[in-house]
Every structure is written in structure tokens, then in C-alpha cells.
Length: 124
Image (cartoon, rainbow, N blue to C red; front, side):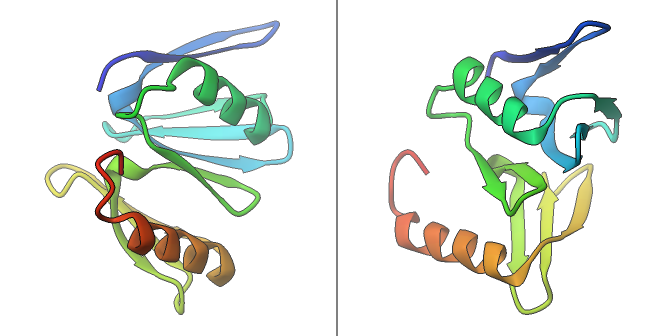
């Protein structure tokens, strides 16, 4: 994976290597970006804006991001475990980091169904 996600507003610029971006969690106008080194950066951008920038800047097939509900955007390259009944999602590289997140059952069920449906696709 190559490329960078560049987010900027009136006060700051954040440049993140795509292969390091694990997930982005949002609350209102603030978004918390988590990277595989355990780093965290809060930016004053709504998740929808960040999602548009990811689509524009990281549009190659090797970059796979999915919106999970209203407040979570995850890098599917790190998807390790989904349990819709528990509302649990685990993102990991199976070596150095593991993030356990909560999401709605409905959103996780949709993600699980989508992955099952497309598991044999070359681009997935």
C-alpha cells in the first residue's frame, strides 16, 4: 500500500501514510485518527469530509476503507474479527496492535454480509 491521506483545515495539516491508518472515530465535528503504531490525532473535521478525502486521495484497489455506522471509518486491510451479536469489531495486524471497537449490530451485520458476499473478489 502506498500513498498518504492529507487532511488540513485553517489551523493544521496532518499527513498519514495509508498503510498506517487503522480507523477513524468521529463525534460531531471532531474525528480521532488511530494509526498502527498506537498513535492518535484529533482533527476538527467531520467523518463525511474525511471519507470524501480518502475516496479522492486513496482511490486505488489496495486501499479498502468502509464506513461502519455514523461514526466509524475502518481500514479493511486490518479487519480481524466481527461479532454483530456483541457489537464488536477487532482491527489488528496480528503482530503488533489490536483495537477492539464497538459498533451497532446492524452496521456490523451489513459489513459481515458484504464481506461474505465478496470474499472471492480479487479486489477485496
